[in-house]
Length: 238
Image 1: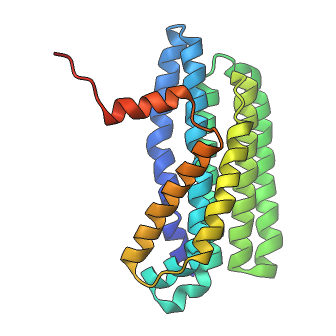
Image 2: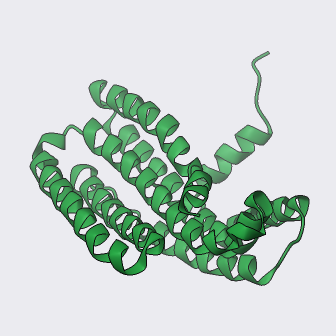
């Protein structure tokens, strides 16, 4: 059951694998050329993209009871709570990887590297302790819970390190994402589907609902709206 849930929790890791190196290269180039404001805005935008994984994780959590039986069969229905925890954990670890890239690219990275190392060691020890405490008592659920808690702590520490290195704050965005996550989780857990196409449609609609909630909460800036307009109406040179 644990392996099946773990296999479905991979997407956030793939996102971080492709996104983090590109972000590091982009921020490094901007810092080297003295475009510090542009680098700071890029870092802020990257963090907002990472925080957008929160509503996505909430949708998966709300629909986990449908996802596992639909993909692996009814016998795997008991793995739904594991998918909830492990998908949330991989989303948090993806955010951590992006935070590490942002801090590494900062011209102030040397000032916070010692704290990062100390906190990294603390997180490693806490993860080991949590696994040793929870797995004997809770089995696979304990392993998933320990992984999720450790990943969440690492993501929070990563955000703190970014704030220290870049003076970038995204707390308001985090609150909006959590409000959207609560709403779509309730909808995902309340609306039940019985076929793969219905589940796919449900996911698509809940993503649209998440975007709508964030829009109503004022998450999208004028620049964000302009980026969307540019994508929908590309301007070509004559």
